[in-house]
Image (cartoon, rainbow, N blue to C red; front, side, top):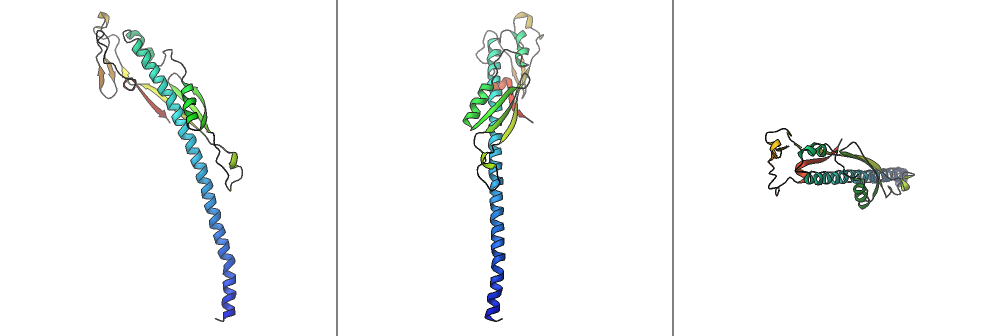
Length: 198
């Protein structure tokens, strides 16, 4: 191969090389944009999950307070376990936690023992090769549920004599409550489960 021919071949390969490098650079930037968007969506989902759980946990604690206040009134227990006790809306707790996680939320009770939260990130995706992402935020939703872990028989033997019904709770935890000695009582996590719903 003559030197002139070799130089001509080298000159033809250079534009191909530049095109390949430019294509790879574009793909890398596109993957970066997708990654930024996915990270922002993940932040929104985390904020929504945490906010919904915070509201549900606050309700669980208030229901437990109600039960403790009426532990000697077993006729009131079922309303408490069913969520019909007069406890305040806990969406304030969801909003408080979302703000700490860099998001704003729209929260609403969903039935007696659940909260649905829609969270939007405060920070946008940012500048990428995809037009319009610089001001695009992410929005995700979550639903958290409070469920009673315990049941009882209000007509059990001894109920008419002032004895308290036995609480039978999930996991095999049974509570034999003595109205004369209420030092050892269930905690909120003994009485209620809190979890995210699909």
